[in-house]
Structures are given as C-alpha cells and as structure tokens.
Image (cartoon, rainbow, N blue to C red; front, top):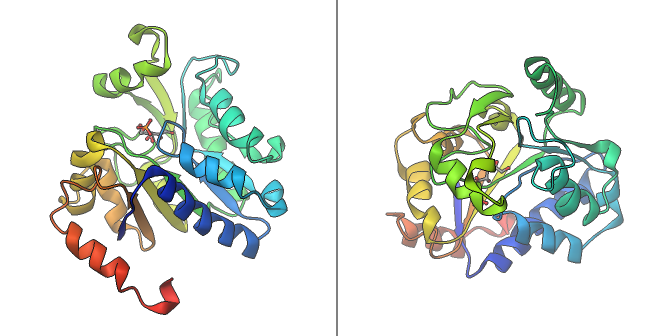
Amino acid sequence: MQVIILPSAAAIGDYAADVILRGVAERPSYVLGVATGSSPLPVYEALERRWIPELAGISAFALDEYVGLPYSHPESYHSVIDREVTTRLRLDPNRVHVPDGFADDPAAAATTYETAIRDAGGIDLQLLGIGGSGHIGFNEPTSSFASRTRIKTLTPGTRSDNARFFSSPDEVPLHCMTQGLGTILDARQVLLVATGEKKASAIARAVEGPLTSMCPGSALQLHPDATVLLDEAAASELTLRDYYRFVFEHRPKWQR
Ligand code: F6R
C-alpha cells in the first residue's frame, strides 16, 4: 500500500485527478468506481476543472446506495452521483450505474449490479472514502472480505455521521446496498482519500492495524495497487508517517 500525505484537500483532489486522467487518456473504455460523501468532492472538482473529452466516453459505477429512498430524493446516491459526477464531468448517463436500492427485489438487483460491473470489463480504478467505523463502501465492521454487492445495515455511528445530509437523523435510512469488499478488491487500482482529524483513527486502523473485518478498510492491505491520499490531520495517528513522507520524496523516477 502506498501512503501519500499532501498539504490540503485540493492537493489530494489534483493528485487523484492526475491518476484518473492518465488512465482515461490511455484507455478509452475506462471504468471508474465512484464514491459519494464529502471526501471525493475535491477529486470531482479537479476533474471538472481539468476536463478532457475522453471523460465523456468512460463508464462509472457507484459504490453504494441507500435502500428505500426514491431515486429522486436529493440525498439518494442516484441524485448525488447525477449532481456531483455525471453532470459535472459530462459523463454519458447511460454509462453511469448506481446500485438499485429502490428495487422490489433487492437481492436480484445486487446480483444484476455485479453482472453489470463484470460486463463492463471490471473497474479500472475505485475511488474510496472511509467512515469512522472503518467502513469502505458501506461495508460496516464484520463484513466478509469475500463479500459481493448486497444489503447491509448501517451502524448507528454511520447514520449519525450522515445525518448532516438529511433534515433529521431519523430520516437516514437503516439499510443500504453496497459493493462488497470482494467487489472492491477486484478493482485493478484503488485510491482512498481521507481528510481531517475525524478520519485519523480509522486510517491508522486500516493502514497499520491488523487485517480484520472489525476494520473493513484493512482489507485494502490485500490489494496489490492501493494508494491512500491523506492530509496531515488524517495521517496524524499513523506510526510510520515520517517513513511514508520519505518514501514519497524519494520515489524512483518511473513512479513519478
Ligand atoms: C460513500 C461511501 C462511504 C463514504 C464514507 C466517508 O459512497 O461509500 O464509505 O466514503 O462514509 O464519507 P465522507 O467522505 O462523507 O466522510
């Protein structure tokens, strides 16, 4: 795992956009895995600012969706992805996919989602945030490392963190449909972004803690091409943070 500590959320956005734009320029049928929440917003801002025509041809798959929120609800991830990703990056809406949390048969919808990812050729780069519980996607603690897209129950902590997007905490749905940890680990490359002191403990457990389903983010230790982009505050509980800085400053030319 590569850990990169950058001076600001804007610098993180630019770094991630560099990686994504390089991939998109090389591969016209690029498949981008997109996250919602606050963490990836600087990445979408940078991609919007540095838009290239090739972006219009990519496919995108969202990580997760609430169960039972109508697609038109402003906080459904269908709406959020449409607003923050499809519109801003001028993607083709027919190639942007979000799990169907409003389906009559959620289990069938989850299987259909897995099939759609496979049919698109798999995800080239999965963008991730991390929750205070250590979740990636909405894979809450004790999620299986082999899990695929399915229904999960949000922890009270996650519901309270996400209450800021709703008019009352009770409005935050109890359930979600999320790509599994196995689905995320299948992406060819993963890029996790985290900023702020509130993420420091989850980051330390995911990056330096034991591999454990109690911290689903620790599953990324199994991924052969995982990069974690952090600001100083999010990196503050990492034991080896000076080493990560040293590694980045002395990275060989071919890695720059
Ligand atoms: C969102 C998602 C979640 C968030 C996490 C952090 O699609 O899958 O894992 O990335 O809850 O949320 P923020 O970035 O709002 O702190």
